[in-house]
Image (cartoon, rainbow, N blue to C red; front, top):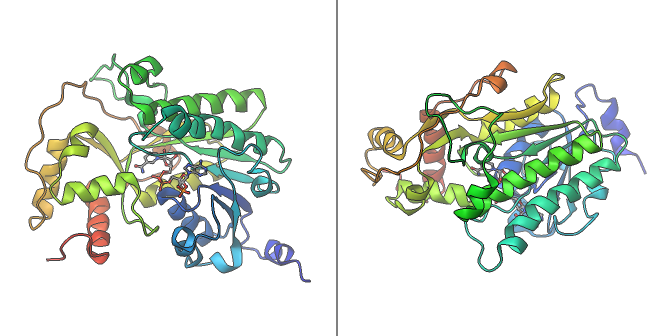
Length: 335
Ligand SMILES: NC(=O)c1ccc[n+]([C@@H]2O[C@H](COP(=O)([O-])OP(=O)(O)OC[C@H]3O[C@@H](n4cnc5c(N)ncnc54)[C@H](OP(=O)(O)O)[C@@H]3O)[C@@H](O)[C@H]2O)c1
């Protein structure tokens, strides 16, 4: 039988073979779309490659039939990423539980898959002699959840969220991302793995998977007039899904990329956000005002990623694309 990988490697557009964990997710699906378009061979990991509802959209991507392979792997099964990662030059680790709240056990549902799951993926990376770089999808929430923020100095990558603060106020998702990124840095330093972490803020834009992830569902709720989720989110940075995908590839490819990279276009209070949105989409029942939260104000300094050449799309562009997508899906009125 003809060895297709050899034929592909002889093609001058071949960019190499990379693995993307959690391939069926919101971020990973868009990242895979961009990786395939730029010529990579992609191994995507999913919990169930046979689940057409979860993976059908991936097979429709341009280049997928020729250059995408899906492999079964679960963050909580030790060694289950070995096959997917072996032979890849790059690994994009995006899989992580993104539940707002655990339904029964925080440790089992959120902390273990995030922290031990990341180490599980990295142990597979360590076994792979072809590995060049790992890009971990962290979160801007690993930077901004602290109680001693100076509102006059924008937060940059040197800032870390406080583990104690997250535990005290039971902010489990942020705790899981903070502990997972810290564990990744420690493991990669000890094992000489080239790690770069990307810290996106709240991601806005069209969704490729048929089911909305929890953040996209929160945005849909806001555009339909709900306030509960954004009451909690408060002041947030926002970034377009396509910029997040492109930034992953940028920090993977750029020879001098190193350390952490905040990935965010603009930080807005809820009231600033709804003011922009209601003016732009007057037919949507966007909430008029949010209560002011007693939380420190902050901004992000994203010069590090911009220094590699990243140019972020505006709030208007990201919400235009998102609203158009919701209308096309029939999730909000198209009038
Ligand atoms: N959305 C945002 O605004 C945002 C902002 C900053 C950072 N991030 C980060 O971006 C990454 C992707 O999130 P997303 O927004 O794309 O959410 P998502 O659509 O829910 O994707 C999460 C992915 O993780 C996978 N996963 C969860 N637990 C797993 C397990 N035990 N084993 C294997 N896979 C598992 C999920 O697989 P299933 O499909 O099988 O459940 C899913 O593919 C996460 O690391 C998240 O923290 C997201």
